[in-house]
Structures are given as structure tokens and as C-alpha cells.
Length: 482
View (cartoon, rainbow, N blue to C red):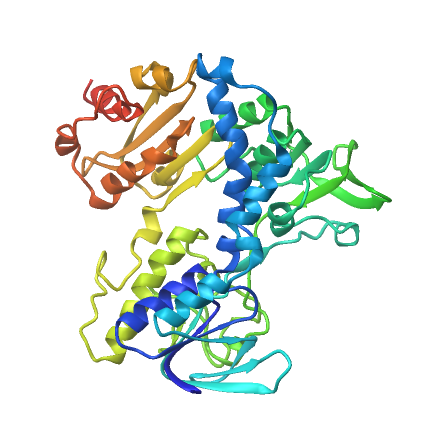
């Protein structure tokens, strides 16, 4: 077949879910992928990074509990950690995910895709001529993002690591310097410090700048507790490789010498070379006419149904639209996009009001995120700063997690903090942040409260079990009521 109802470019998590939902809606679907089916999350990001982090975290957790601490013998087996990572990514073999595509009736074409006309995609396949695919209804671009390499003199020539290199390494270097202070930087700093690597983090500002300030402060303390060096307020002025070493010259006149250098300073969209500059992808208010203001390699702006502004047959889902660069948000967008593509193709009613079936409303103010570092950071919704900038009349309530009975049982000397941001006009929570051991499992309840806009008076009746760390909900509401 060369004609389908829907063509999906990119078989990562977002692309797979768009294709699956559209196929469930009765459409014929083909997905085009140039690398591995499953994409970055399965092979170079979420899954391998968490596999690298988990073993050392479990060991630290055991050592934090009396009785278990005394039973722990020996040190972390780093080689076994890398072997477990290899098993997690199936040795970078995607045959299982290819079998899944086949089982649900989604066709796969491997190669480089380019949009060459309205609803037309030309695929340059390996060892063969081009294949021209046409779509009766829609094309969905789900090509994700890639690590950004900043313009620092000598950096490219020094052959630094990007995030993929850090998660696919076969052994831990003796020394690792990391440029950046975001999620990738702190997670990889935590992982490699756990391996015994001498880690140095170089961040222009504080860590995790998108979170509440106390989150970055506690993570900085946690990394230093693991033996890492964290230097903030510095930027690389130049980089050069000297044999087996990389030297980073900093703007304060000092330098850092390391075995490997990881650059974790942000992401860029994988839209280069897709041919989209031939279409008017300009967002409302950004000009118009052929090509608008969009350039090859830009992020793609979409509406809440994930349809590209001004091009009614083109959708962009996941990282490429820059709404929320997180796997779970990409999957969420994909469910909405796949369903709405099928609905429009079948002539069905579109549910595109806020929080409707065919929109990604949660992208705006209700995004949950977990950073798996030391300690963990879990958050959803708006920070205090973001809420004030949005013009909300808010009240902030903080609580020390270490005061909870459940926390004291969870680990000796449990240290953590949480913050609740309340919209006073509506008496609902608009943001929650948790920092502490194993707080990742707390964020779903907070997400339910934020998305559901559950009134605080009703939350008062959601009684947390004792003794658990979830008792923090009661303590926050007690503090709010006064």
C-alpha cells in the first residue's frame, strides 16, 4: 500500500500512540521511522536513564534504614548496572515493538521522511528507491527533539557527550563534567556519582530552574552529599580536548579538566529537512503568506487538538510542538490527536472544548513531572512564581516532610519539603511540589487535585492512610485552615 488515511512520521512514543488511537478509530495507518521503533524514551532517555539511576538509589535507600543498613555488604556493582540497562533497552533491538505494530495493524516503513506535497510524504528507504506515500486525511509529525549543542568555542571539536551518549555508555568514566542544570544534568550527575565517578556540574544559574527554588537547593545539597561538585554562576568560555582529557575554561578564569564532558543545556526540534518550510506554518499573529515566519528546523506551533495552524491536514505531536517536552505529555497529546484525526475523518463530532476528549488542555497549567535525582523532585501545575505571573491571587503553604510519622518510618533522618499553591478566588490547588526520598509516587494524587479542580473543602474529606508520607495532605490542609 502507498495510500493510507493517516501517515505518521516518527515511531517514538508520541507517534506510536497517535497511530494506535487512529487505528482504533478505524483508520488505515502507516508509520515512518528512520531509527528504532519506540524512539528516544525506550532506548536513549526515560528507560535507560532510570535503569542507570535505580540500583544506586535502592542501595542508598537500604542504607538509610536501620537493620537493613547493617545487612548491606559490598559496593555497587557498576558492570551489573550497565548490564541491567542493556536488558531494559533490549540491547537496542526494536523487534518487540515492531511486532506490536504488526499486531494492531499499523504498517511500518523504515527510512527518512520528507513532506513533498499536500498529504504526501516521500521516504528515502535504505538500499532502495524512494517510496511516495499519500494520506487521505492527515499527516502527523512526531519526530521529537534532540540535544542542543551551544555555541561555545571548541565545544564541537572536543567531541562531548550528549544525553544519548550518557545513557548508552558502556562504562563509567573516572571524571565527568556536566554543562547544564536541568533535568538531564541532575539525573546524570546523580547516576554517575552513584557509580563512583568524580562529577562536576557547571550551571550558569541554580539547578532545576523551572521548579520551586527550594527544589534546586535541596538537590544541590543531595549531589554534594554523593560527592559531586556543583558550581553555579559560571559559564564555559571555551573547550578543548587534550588527548584523553577535556579542558573546560570558565568565564571566571578557572578551568575544569575531565575525562568526559556531557552537554545538557536544552533541546532542539527534529524538524530539519522535513520539507515543512514549503507550507504556511505561521501561528496566529506571527505573520502570514507562503512560509509565514517558519523556518526549516523550527518548533511547530499547534492548536489544542494538535493541528498545525493554517494547515488543516497536518498535525504535530510530542516534543516537536514545544508544549511540554515530557514523554507522558507526548502520549497524552497523541491520544487526543489520534482520536480527533479519526473523528474528523469519520465525520464525527469533535469534542474540542477545554478538557474535552480531543484536546490537550493539561499542557497549559497541569503538567506533572518527576526528576529522579537525590533527592527526588515531583511537581505538577504552577510554581509560586508562575502563579503570580499569571495574575492569580494565591496563598502558599509549605510543610517539612521530615515531621511526618510515615516519613520517619520510611527512612532514618528523612529530609524533604513540599509546597501547595492555592488559587484563593476558587479555593483550588493550582500547583504542588514535593522534594524528598521516593516522592514520585505522591504526584499523581496532586495531579488529580489540580486537573479536577477539587475544592479544598472536599479534599478535607480525602483522609490519608496512617502512617504514610501521604499524610502530608492532611498537614497542608490543617496549615491552610489555620
